[in-house]
Length: 40
Image 1 (tube, one colour):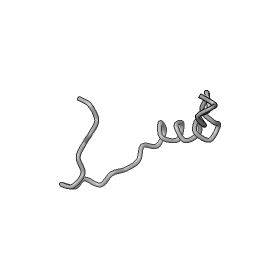
Image 2: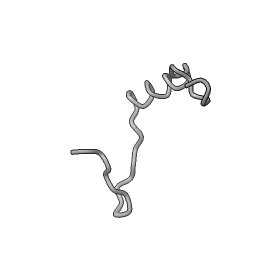
Image 3: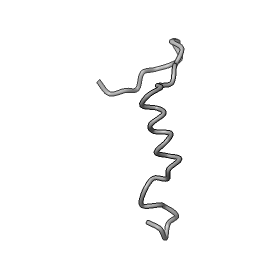
Image 4: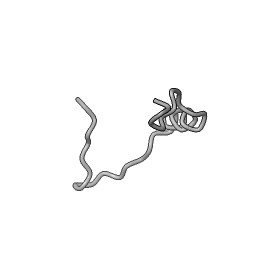
């Protein structure tokens, strides 16, 4: 992995972004142009 530029673990910044997303989900304004791509 390291030979190809990938880190084996996520950095502290990535971990913080994930925690932020868990506590504060992004708001998306409903629109006909926005599709819900979450699996059902």
